[in-house]
Image (tube, rainbow, N blue to C red; front, side, top):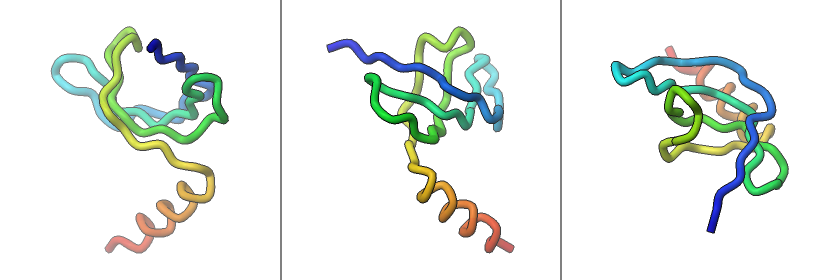
Length: 71
């Protein structure tokens, strides 16, 4: 089974590893489904990816509140 993905919007790079992989927050559609906010590492040419987390807009908004509460 082949995985199809499309990066709809790039929000930013959080870090870059020594090997050039980047940890990014993007809006991504997997297998032509509704895009979700996606946090994971990508190879420099975007052909490989690590495991990551995908969040709906509501989940991302909750995460934002949690992060803002961190001292």
